[in-house]
Length: 190
Image 1 (cartoon, rainbow, N blue to C red):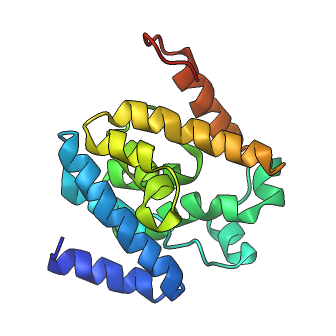
Image 2 (image 1 turned 30 degrees about the horizontal axis):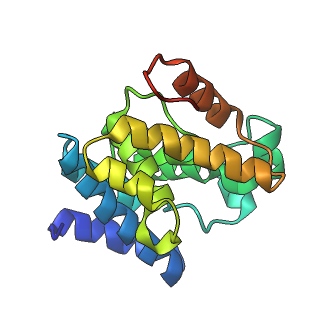
């Protein structure tokens, strides 16, 4: 999306992250935009949230804690888990007021309630962007207009990955996981 405002946001973020992280951010923004289009959402909001989602990802643990004080043991032991809340705070300081965009920035780390469609699009884009080399089936589902199903699988994939590595799962991710598992859906098991 070649828009002057988006270019300005991207340039602001580029100054805060490594070149590799910035390449990831651009892929997430572009994929989030495509997912939004495929699911009848506002692509510009998804793109902006994608551009801003990892703005705080390369901050030091101290800076992350300053912007988003740890609220639980997972965040104390794994400060990178703070980068979604820290990124939201940064976006607010930059003047972003769109709650859907802010929720997407914060929620891409933990997961969100399924009523936050833009946030689901960014979450799915983050875990399935082509540069990661995994989760192509999740990406395909989202691009086929099946965002909720793609999101369910993305959250499940994240929980399984963290558990397989012995990394504690954030309480909000577990909440999203359980919420998705409890929704009645024919033929789907989390």
